[in-house]
Length: 496
Image 1: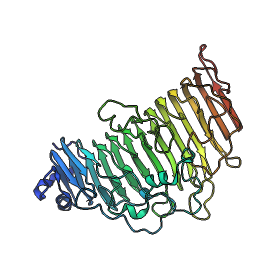
Image 2 (image 1 turned 120 degrees about the vertical axis):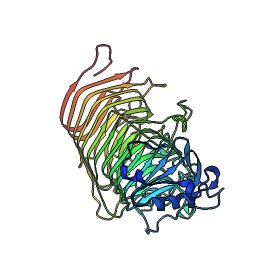
Image 3 (image 1 turned 180 degrees about the vertical axis):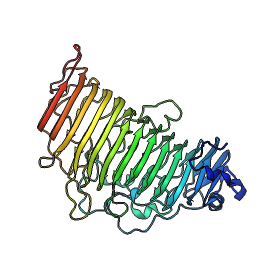
Image 4 (image 1 turned 60 degrees about the vertical axis):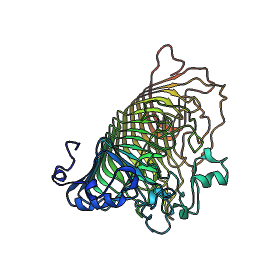
């Protein structure tokens, strides 16, 4: 019943069963008080055990030196304030949070939260079901409001936006994250299944020495978000998020100042955009075509969009993308991205562009926020198939701030046939302060690879294949200096 090895073996010497503090586990009785009593009893070096059962709860407050273990057959259910007698812990009163949305700015309004603690673990093989959590919340409140939403949402009415982004008062008593960690050191999350995790299944902000491994997440918005995190590892996780991003690294101003995300490894993971719930049941449904931003389903690995601080030494290795958008690397809020290596990626049915590197000028930050930088990106050994033929792989900077030193090596991109003829578009506008998405420029002016405002581009063994005649060139380089191209194609391929 107890997983081995434990991340903190000494925690196993003191086991506290939630039932010994009054938890019922029948799925009807609220067990919040009993669970929190068990956590307090285990504080400082103990393990809280959830035996098989269905434990209905509002907020669970982690203490330092505690391991939570959901045994096989145990499900922790997020209660619903509309149906159950209680509420989630209040979101913190931190004043106006101008530069990131509500979900990033608060942690206590969660099913499980820890703040300023260390040496904690949350382990399976049981399940967290955020049945009563909400995926919604207000957006950022900064006055400029440039690039706040993807351009694909431009046609939505005020009522439709309000449904996705209710005001702050409407969030009182609600929970919008399954697991939230703020400034936590030495944390492990492993072996869990998380279903319907709210805005974030896992949000870690300002954390150090974090391991997330062997988790299966099938949720209604973001999967795993690492914001201003140092020394983190995500491995062997399956994350299905048709409505938003699966695994994301960010550097927001949620802690009140810019901080880096650095020394992070994402490896041996699978991200996807199957119909919600169908990764877990194995049916891999494909009814849903669009995400709430009215672009095609999401489910990707991304660096950004929140990018006020530096990103450095990021490794993304041996990951699969299934029916999802491709890899995105985005810096638009004055930060910097450097020393990123993405290697050995396999993508199938890419719903927008397979690769998207964007340096923009949204500058969602305080007065004095400048334009950021992207440089030192290596993407190698990538195979992508079934790519939406409208969108080439894209590397796009700004006229006065190019993306620098990007290497694409051993890349094969196979584009799906178009359902209708694709006309060659006009030159795309700069859209410097727009929200970065691969669809932001419309149909790209090349079908395979389009680069604009890039200095130091190396193309080594780039293979492109388009299943249908296309009036666009396979590659277009606009305002690109120092391009070293070594491009190959098999004899039966149409170009490059």
